[in-house]
Length: 373
Image (cartoon, rainbow, N blue to C red; front, side, top):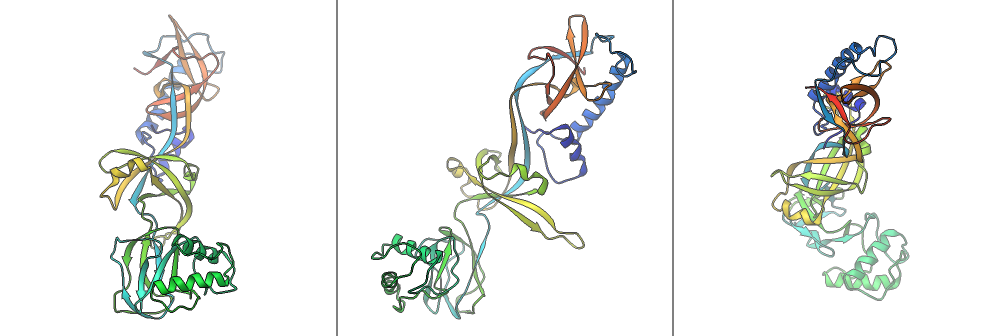
């Protein structure tokens, strides 16, 4: 259910490309029109003439409703793209000839070749530190720990998984090299392995078998293997994109599935023509395991994502049309008590589905208030 504060509703008229569910401009215009009508009503009751407010209105309202208790949510709907997340480019770090490439869409796991140069494999390994140097005896660092961790996972033993490349590490590397038909040097030269966060899915091929390659030349791009939704929000909506927050995703067939924000980053979108670049907030949303079957066959699709920033449970609400503008400023409601009425000042909270959250002295669930007919 969409919602916003009264100030936020006014901002929606500024033309920013965001969509609050139920927060149509017509609803805002209705509030403005209501305020004007309410001023006239309150004025006729003597509330705006600078005098003392009467204890009862001059006439009963045209219609009545009851104050209800419910849950209100501050939400925002945004356009999202279902896919496999951001792409990463794999480049050659060695000169030679491309002799093998995987198919687009293929999944590559730990220890398997990502591509081959001069018929020697460039091997995928898992880790967060990119390969940037030769690894050999005496080398220390997180990239060494990445290598040793992968060797251990692949079944090689005789060394300690730490940040030191020892002779024991070199012996395990030589065994690994022998198994892959490589020269047994005990040195993992730059360009022999590619580190990624996990198994990858080949997205596009930027080279061809038989094509010469050189250091820095693009070979292919890859993504993760789990489907995620990518959403870009305006910078002022960053409060909605919190890592770990739950969201709802509406698929092309109208089915709603749950998701969770796994990553948030600030990105710069280049301007078109003479326009200035724009700062956006990019959020990655993971689809829940139970909902992944619903996305089968959807490699790429446009989806709607509902973010929830605030949830107010068990609050008093009335129809927006029940608000009246008070002489001293702000809004109130006209409480109906038998044949008489009185005005009670209220503080407004969230707006959602044609209703508004209110709080005020003496107000309670079930009380009768005036509203538009």
